[in-house]
Amino acid sequence: MPSPHPRSINVDYINPFIEATITTFQTMINVVPTREAVVLKGAGSEAYGISGIIGLSGEANGAVVLTFPEAVAIAVVGRLAGEDFPAITSQVVNGVGELAGIIAGDAKNRLVQKGYKFELGQPKIVTGRSHISAQSSAIPCIVVSFTCELGRFCLEISLKKPL
Image 1 (cartoon, helix red, strand yellow):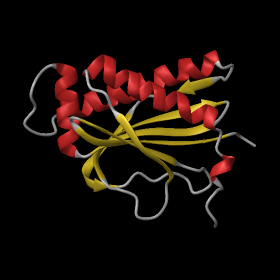
Image 2: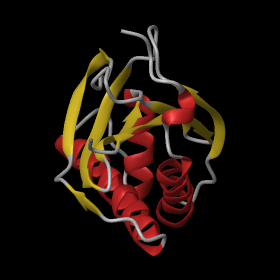
Image 3: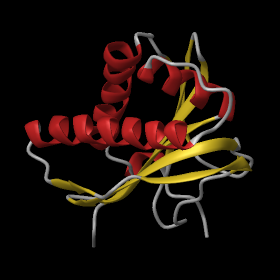
């Protein structure tokens, strides 16, 4: 099945997540993330160590995935919590889920201000070296890569209007 055309993706849905990610990292982690690229996810996408997944429904259905290499997740959550973690711990896992929830909640508020209606699911966490998050091939997935002083991470946004 061919990939959805990037123009079929509503940027009104995407930009609030980018803005929410930048704001969250600036205010809660005290780092300034720089957006590197925005691409349509395809084969050969990067593998990561820990991901926070938030399901969305309403105006459009899909998910948002905040995904980090293990070392970056440890550094980011350590900065958020104000402590050092030697490895992926339950606190790091919970911290990634919390960050995903904060970003999704902020983006939802931004979307509501534009007149859209969304509901958020509870964060789900996936851990394990070199996992690749996979979304439905019927829903286009935009990958927004960021870099900051703590490392590189991505936000994957896959939303589609219900038929």
